[in-house]
Image (cartoon, rainbow, N blue to C red; front, top):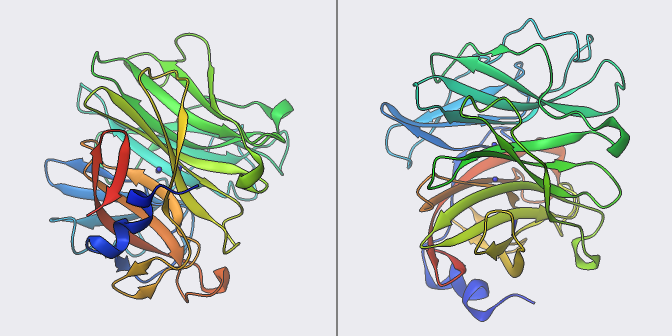
Length: 306
Protein backbone atom coordinates (compact mmCIF):
# COMPACT_ATOMS: atom_id res chain seq x y z
CA UNK A 1 0.00 0.00 0.00
CA UNK A 2 2.65 4.98 -0.26
CA UNK A 3 4.17 14.48 -2.31
CA UNK A 4 2.70 11.94 0.66
CA UNK A 5 6.36 25.94 -2.89
CA UNK A 6 8.12 23.18 -4.90
CA UNK A 7 11.90 23.24 -4.63
CA UNK A 8 13.75 23.80 -7.88
CA UNK A 9 15.38 20.40 -7.50
CA UNK A 10 12.09 18.57 -7.08
CA UNK A 11 10.34 20.58 -9.78
CA UNK A 12 12.99 19.78 -12.38
CA UNK A 13 13.42 16.12 -11.48
CA UNK A 14 11.15 14.73 -14.17
CA UNK A 15 12.76 16.76 -16.96
CA UNK A 16 16.36 16.12 -15.93
CA UNK A 17 16.05 12.42 -15.13
CA UNK A 18 14.19 9.51 -16.67
CA UNK A 19 10.43 9.84 -16.49
CA UNK A 20 8.12 7.42 -14.66
CA UNK A 21 6.87 4.46 -16.69
CA UNK A 22 3.32 3.11 -16.97
CA UNK A 23 3.48 -0.61 -16.23
CA UNK A 24 -0.19 -1.66 -15.86
CA UNK A 25 -2.80 -0.20 -18.18
CA UNK A 26 -5.71 -1.48 -16.09
CA UNK A 27 -7.56 -0.09 -13.10
CA UNK A 28 -5.03 -0.78 -10.30
CA UNK A 29 -5.49 1.96 -7.66
CA UNK A 30 -3.40 2.57 -4.53
CA UNK A 31 -0.55 0.20 -5.44
CA UNK A 32 1.76 -0.99 -2.67
CA UNK A 33 5.26 -2.35 -3.21
CA UNK A 34 7.23 -5.21 -1.67
CA UNK A 35 10.24 -7.23 -2.80
CA UNK A 36 10.61 -10.90 -1.83
CA UNK A 37 13.08 -13.65 -2.68
CA UNK A 38 11.06 -14.51 -5.79
CA UNK A 39 10.51 -10.99 -7.12
CA UNK A 40 8.45 -7.84 -6.76
CA UNK A 41 4.76 -7.71 -5.79
CA UNK A 42 2.16 -4.97 -5.74
CA UNK A 43 -1.29 -5.12 -4.12
CA UNK A 44 -4.13 -2.77 -5.03
CA UNK A 45 -7.65 -1.65 -4.12
CA UNK A 46 -10.63 -3.82 -5.07
CA UNK A 47 -11.28 -4.00 -8.80
CA UNK A 48 -11.31 -6.24 -11.85
CA UNK A 49 -13.61 -8.68 -10.03
CA UNK A 50 -11.56 -9.22 -6.84
CA UNK A 51 -11.26 -7.60 -3.41
CA UNK A 52 -7.44 -7.37 -3.37
CA UNK A 53 -5.61 -7.23 -6.69
CA UNK A 54 -2.08 -8.58 -7.14
CA UNK A 55 0.59 -7.82 -9.74
CA UNK A 56 4.10 -9.28 -10.02
CA UNK A 57 7.44 -8.48 -11.62
CA UNK A 58 10.78 -10.25 -11.74
CA UNK A 59 12.78 -7.11 -12.50
CA UNK A 60 10.59 -4.13 -11.42
CA UNK A 61 10.46 -3.05 -15.07
CA UNK A 62 7.78 -5.33 -16.55
CA UNK A 63 4.66 -6.07 -14.52
CA UNK A 64 1.83 -8.58 -14.87
CA UNK A 65 -1.62 -8.45 -13.30
CA UNK A 66 -2.64 -11.81 -11.85
CA UNK A 67 -6.09 -11.72 -13.44
CA UNK A 68 -8.82 -13.27 -11.30
CA UNK A 69 -6.46 -13.82 -8.35
CA UNK A 70 -7.88 -12.48 -5.09
CA UNK A 71 -5.37 -12.15 -2.25
CA UNK A 72 -8.27 -12.13 0.27
CA UNK A 73 -10.95 -14.37 -1.22
CA UNK A 74 -12.85 -14.37 2.08
CA UNK A 75 -14.71 -14.97 4.21
CA UNK A 76 -14.31 -11.58 5.87
CA UNK A 77 -14.74 -11.12 9.65
CA UNK A 78 -17.88 -9.87 11.38
CA UNK A 79 -16.57 -6.31 11.81
CA UNK A 80 -16.70 -5.76 8.03
CA UNK A 81 -19.73 -4.87 5.93
CA UNK A 82 -21.48 -8.07 4.83
CA UNK A 83 -22.73 -6.87 1.46
CA UNK A 84 -19.17 -6.14 0.35
CA UNK A 85 -16.25 -4.76 2.38
CA UNK A 86 -14.88 -2.61 -0.50
CA UNK A 87 -11.24 -3.22 0.37
CA UNK A 88 -8.98 -0.20 -0.14
CA UNK A 89 -5.22 0.32 -0.27
CA UNK A 90 -3.76 -3.02 0.89
CA UNK A 91 -0.13 -3.12 2.01
CA UNK A 92 2.00 -6.18 2.80
CA UNK A 93 5.05 -6.64 5.02
CA UNK A 94 7.16 -9.73 5.65
CA UNK A 95 7.79 -10.60 9.30
CA UNK A 96 11.05 -11.92 10.69
CA UNK A 97 9.50 -15.40 10.87
CA UNK A 98 8.75 -15.36 7.13
CA UNK A 99 4.99 -14.89 7.49
CA UNK A 100 3.29 -12.11 5.50
CA UNK A 101 0.97 -9.54 7.07
CA UNK A 102 -1.50 -7.50 5.01
CA UNK A 103 -2.97 -4.23 6.21
CA UNK A 104 -6.22 -3.36 4.47
CA UNK A 105 -9.15 -0.95 4.82
CA UNK A 106 -12.71 -2.27 4.71
CA UNK A 107 -16.19 -0.90 5.25
CA UNK A 108 -17.53 -1.73 8.71
CA UNK A 109 -20.70 -3.43 9.88
CA UNK A 110 -21.26 -0.78 12.59
CA UNK A 111 -21.06 2.11 10.12
CA UNK A 112 -21.35 0.96 6.52
CA UNK A 113 -20.14 4.33 5.24
CA UNK A 114 -16.84 4.19 7.15
CA UNK A 115 -13.68 2.12 6.68
CA UNK A 116 -11.51 0.66 9.42
CA UNK A 117 -8.11 -1.01 9.15
CA UNK A 118 -7.79 -4.77 9.39
CA UNK A 119 -4.94 -7.25 9.24
CA UNK A 120 -4.64 -10.57 7.47
CA UNK A 121 -1.93 -13.24 7.46
CA UNK A 122 -0.50 -15.71 4.97
CA UNK A 123 2.49 -18.02 4.61
CA UNK A 124 2.65 -17.08 0.91
CA UNK A 125 3.17 -13.61 -0.52
CA UNK A 126 0.35 -14.21 -3.04
CA UNK A 127 -2.03 -15.43 -0.36
CA UNK A 128 -4.68 -16.43 0.32
CA UNK A 129 -4.61 -14.09 3.30
CA UNK A 130 -6.82 -14.88 6.30
CA UNK A 131 -8.30 -11.76 7.96
CA UNK A 132 -8.08 -11.49 11.72
CA UNK A 133 -11.26 -11.28 13.78
CA UNK A 134 -10.72 -7.74 15.08
CA UNK A 135 -9.61 -4.55 13.30
CA UNK A 136 -6.24 -3.03 14.11
CA UNK A 137 -7.55 0.55 14.03
CA UNK A 138 -11.23 1.50 14.03
CA UNK A 139 -11.79 5.13 15.12
CA UNK A 140 -15.39 5.51 13.97
CA UNK A 141 -15.65 8.71 16.03
CA UNK A 142 -13.06 10.13 13.62
CA UNK A 143 -14.82 8.96 10.50
CA UNK A 144 -12.85 5.72 10.28
CA UNK A 145 -9.35 5.04 9.00
CA UNK A 146 -7.74 4.05 5.70
CA UNK A 147 -4.41 3.75 3.87
CA UNK A 148 -2.41 1.73 6.38
CA UNK A 149 1.22 0.88 5.57
CA UNK A 150 3.83 -1.01 7.56
CA UNK A 151 7.31 0.26 8.42
CA UNK A 152 10.23 -1.32 10.28
CA UNK A 153 12.89 0.95 11.75
CA UNK A 154 16.62 0.23 11.96
CA UNK A 155 16.26 -1.02 15.55
CA UNK A 156 13.62 -3.56 14.50
CA UNK A 157 10.64 -1.65 15.90
CA UNK A 158 7.57 -1.96 13.71
CA UNK A 159 4.98 0.70 13.03
CA UNK A 160 1.76 1.17 11.07
CA UNK A 161 1.12 4.56 9.46
CA UNK A 162 -2.46 5.39 8.51
CA UNK A 163 -4.93 8.21 7.87
CA UNK A 164 -8.09 9.02 9.79
CA UNK A 165 -11.10 10.36 7.90
CA UNK A 166 -11.79 13.23 10.30
CA UNK A 167 -12.11 16.83 9.11
CA UNK A 168 -8.34 17.31 9.42
CA UNK A 169 -7.61 14.02 7.57
CA UNK A 170 -4.73 13.33 9.92
CA UNK A 171 -1.84 10.92 9.32
CA UNK A 172 -0.87 8.85 12.38
CA UNK A 173 1.91 6.55 13.55
CA UNK A 174 1.04 3.45 15.62
CA UNK A 175 3.82 1.26 17.10
CA UNK A 176 3.07 -2.46 16.89
CA UNK A 177 4.68 -5.55 18.35
CA UNK A 178 6.94 -7.82 16.33
CA UNK A 179 3.87 -9.71 15.10
CA UNK A 180 2.94 -6.61 13.08
CA UNK A 181 -0.60 -6.84 14.42
CA UNK A 182 -0.73 -5.94 18.12
CA UNK A 183 -0.64 -2.23 19.07
CA UNK A 184 2.33 -1.43 21.32
CA UNK A 185 2.12 2.08 22.72
CA UNK A 186 0.47 5.37 21.97
CA UNK A 187 -0.47 6.75 18.59
CA UNK A 188 1.40 9.85 17.37
CA UNK A 189 0.10 12.44 14.91
CA UNK A 190 2.57 12.96 12.07
CA UNK A 191 0.81 15.40 9.73
CA UNK A 192 -2.45 17.30 9.41
CA UNK A 193 -4.10 18.82 6.39
CA UNK A 194 -3.04 22.37 5.51
CA UNK A 195 -4.77 24.98 3.36
CA UNK A 196 -2.92 24.11 0.15
CA UNK A 197 -3.83 20.41 0.51
CA UNK A 198 -7.45 20.93 -0.51
CA UNK A 199 -9.93 18.79 1.40
CA UNK A 200 -7.55 16.01 2.51
CA UNK A 201 -4.20 14.32 2.80
CA UNK A 202 -3.88 10.55 2.44
CA UNK A 203 -1.85 7.57 1.18
CA UNK A 204 1.24 7.79 3.43
CA UNK A 205 4.44 5.82 2.90
CA UNK A 206 7.57 5.95 5.05
CA UNK A 207 11.23 5.09 4.48
CA UNK A 208 14.49 5.93 6.24
CA UNK A 209 17.73 6.85 4.49
CA UNK A 210 20.99 8.12 6.00
CA UNK A 211 19.34 9.13 9.26
CA UNK A 212 16.40 10.95 7.66
CA UNK A 213 12.79 9.73 7.57
CA UNK A 214 10.93 10.49 4.33
CA UNK A 215 7.13 10.52 4.56
CA UNK A 216 5.25 10.69 1.26
CA UNK A 217 1.55 11.51 1.07
CA UNK A 218 -1.05 12.73 -1.41
CA UNK A 219 -3.27 15.78 -1.18
CA UNK A 220 -6.60 16.85 -2.76
CA UNK A 221 -9.17 14.33 -4.03
CA UNK A 222 -7.99 11.44 -6.18
CA UNK A 223 -10.38 12.49 -8.96
CA UNK A 224 -9.11 16.09 -9.02
CA UNK A 225 -6.34 17.33 -11.35
CA UNK A 226 -4.78 18.87 -8.21
CA UNK A 227 -4.16 15.39 -6.77
CA UNK A 228 -0.42 14.98 -6.28
CA UNK A 229 2.36 13.39 -4.26
CA UNK A 230 4.18 15.43 -1.63
CA UNK A 231 6.70 14.59 1.05
CA UNK A 232 7.95 15.65 4.47
CA UNK A 233 11.10 14.76 6.40
CA UNK A 234 12.14 14.26 10.02
CA UNK A 235 15.08 13.08 12.10
CA UNK A 236 12.83 11.09 14.42
CA UNK A 237 10.25 8.54 13.29
CA UNK A 238 7.59 10.29 15.37
CA UNK A 239 8.50 13.71 13.99
CA UNK A 240 8.19 16.62 13.87
CA UNK A 241 7.98 16.38 10.08
CA UNK A 242 8.87 19.32 7.84
CA UNK A 243 7.12 19.56 4.49
CA UNK A 244 9.50 19.68 1.53
CA UNK A 245 7.23 19.98 -1.54
CA UNK A 246 5.89 17.89 -4.42
CA UNK A 247 7.46 15.01 -6.30
CA UNK A 248 4.53 14.22 -8.61
CA UNK A 249 1.83 16.45 -10.09
CA UNK A 250 -0.49 16.68 -13.08
CA UNK A 251 1.45 17.55 -16.22
CA UNK A 252 4.64 15.70 -15.31
CA UNK A 253 6.16 13.70 -18.15
CA UNK A 254 6.04 9.90 -18.31
CA UNK A 255 6.70 7.33 -21.03
CA UNK A 256 2.99 7.63 -21.83
CA UNK A 257 2.75 11.38 -22.22
CA UNK A 258 1.97 13.72 -19.37
CA UNK A 259 0.34 12.29 -16.26
CA UNK A 260 -2.94 13.34 -14.65
CA UNK A 261 -3.67 13.15 -10.91
CA UNK A 262 -0.60 11.11 -9.87
CA UNK A 263 -0.48 9.95 -6.27
CA UNK A 264 -0.76 7.09 -3.83
CA UNK A 265 3.00 6.58 -4.02
CA UNK A 266 4.60 3.73 -2.08
CA UNK A 267 8.33 3.26 -1.37
CA UNK A 268 10.37 0.12 -1.79
CA UNK A 269 12.00 -0.90 1.47
CA UNK A 270 15.41 0.39 0.34
CA UNK A 271 13.99 3.75 -0.70
CA UNK A 272 15.20 3.48 -4.29
CA UNK A 273 11.88 2.87 -6.05
CA UNK A 274 8.24 3.89 -5.93
CA UNK A 275 5.00 2.86 -7.55
CA UNK A 276 1.99 5.15 -7.88
CA UNK A 277 -1.31 5.51 -9.74
CA UNK A 278 -2.68 8.08 -12.18
CA UNK A 279 -5.74 8.38 -14.45
CA UNK A 280 -5.64 5.80 -17.25
CA UNK A 281 -7.13 8.08 -19.89
CA UNK A 282 -5.07 11.12 -18.90
CA UNK A 283 -8.20 13.16 -18.23
CA UNK A 284 -10.41 11.81 -15.46
CA UNK A 285 -11.07 8.76 -13.30
CA UNK A 286 -13.82 7.31 -15.51
CA UNK A 287 -11.52 4.55 -16.81
CA UNK A 288 -9.78 3.95 -13.49
CA UNK A 289 -6.19 4.48 -12.45
CA UNK A 290 -3.14 2.86 -14.03
CA UNK A 291 0.03 1.87 -12.19
CA UNK A 292 3.37 3.58 -12.80
CA UNK A 293 6.88 2.86 -11.55
CA UNK A 294 9.87 5.13 -11.01
CA UNK A 295 13.39 5.01 -9.65
CA UNK A 296 14.10 7.67 -7.04
CA UNK A 297 17.02 9.16 -5.14
CA UNK A 298 16.95 10.22 -1.50
CA UNK A 299 19.70 12.67 -0.59
CA UNK A 300 20.01 15.52 1.84
CA UNK A 301 16.32 15.49 2.70
CA UNK A 302 15.24 15.72 -0.96
CA UNK A 303 13.48 13.18 -3.21
CA UNK A 304 14.20 13.21 -6.93
CA UNK A 305 13.03 10.87 -9.67
CA UNK A 306 15.90 9.39 -11.64
